[in-house]
Length: 94
Image (cartoon, rainbow, N blue to C red):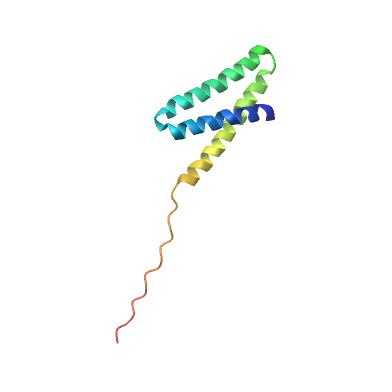
């Protein structure tokens, strides 16, 4: 799986870069990346170089990493509330 993960990393980075550079093409970029992942997995089965369980495991492994990184990215993008300073105490007028 390390070979598949390291081969998929540049493609994933290219997809992220494309989404950042052309936000209007987000849906098309995500669809293309998903189609590429499915086609690569099916080609590995067709060529007989992997068992179906290997391909399914690779897809699940990739989906788990994608979910983890998407969760981290969303949490980092969310603005954090700043702590408010306590109001100065009213001084009694003598």
